[in-house]
Length: 234
Ligand SMILES: C[S@@+](CC[C@H](N)C(=O)[O-])C[C@H]1O[C@@H](n2cnc3c(N)ncnc32)[C@H](O)[C@@H]1O
Image (cartoon, rainbow, N blue to C red):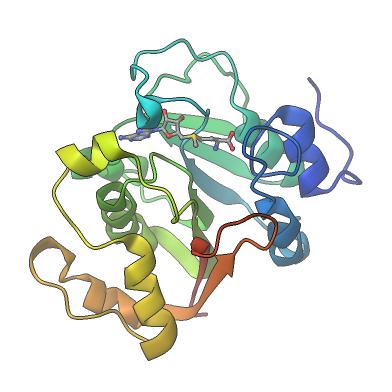
């Protein structure tokens, strides 16, 4: 499919390409209604973005990482929405079938620091990073530690679906605090709680954060934090 007109907003693109970030497909998270207000002013200026997690029904719900992948709805959406951006995708399943001069794919596991390092091995700096991967707390936090330093000043980092963690991953991965609790603390205190061990570097990252904006979805029964928008200091 060719690139759609810039008159299409993010929700229209999500619904058209089948991302559940919009209002029509799958869990219809309605995130795009808010993202539009956040991203529309940056639409022409986003040059490099990264999404973690590219197609629903992966290993987070028990499928094999080697499943068949025939589509990547949100990448198609971002490519149309940001006409000047290169879109990097990171996923444990293989999406190398998708050829587009503005798409760069890295296959890897969010639970493996060396895999995440490969995303930024060439010194990439992103204007926008969105984590829609497995939603496991350990994955979200390791990715944030590794990739937030690669966010441009003033850039935006979003972590989605903080209200749902997959049991299969939560049980097999190292135990850690829920990501929404970490950011709820930042939201109230302007810093992360002191964390031991591998999470200790969060303290350093605190200083680079300008805004933490939690999203509570008003379109369903959810009353816990759904997603978090983090803006880096200019
Ligand atoms: C919720 S889906 C992404 C949906 C997509 N962004 C959209 O809007 O249509 C989650 C994705 O995370 C990927 N994933 C699951 N476990 C992962 C892991 N350990 N490392 C990296 N990606 C993983 C899955 O393969 C799947 O593509």
